Length: 86
Ligand code: FES
Image (spheres, rainbow, N blue to C red):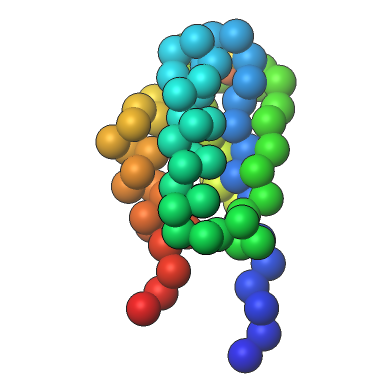
């Protein structure tokens, strides 16, 4: 069985997304990755504003943008996208 590529997780660090939730979301993601020992399965990066501020905070998983990512939605996304298969 081949190793999967790491999931690319891109967090908007623009001022709107950052102040409306991504500041906290970064910590939640780091805690989740650490708790589940997923450091080698996730490529975490930040990017500048992409003009989608009114829909933010925005987070992109492998090129798919998710909007209005609050703590509950983020946990759901992380479970869907990253949780190890049993
Ligand atoms: S600050 Fe995130 S899209 Fe503008």
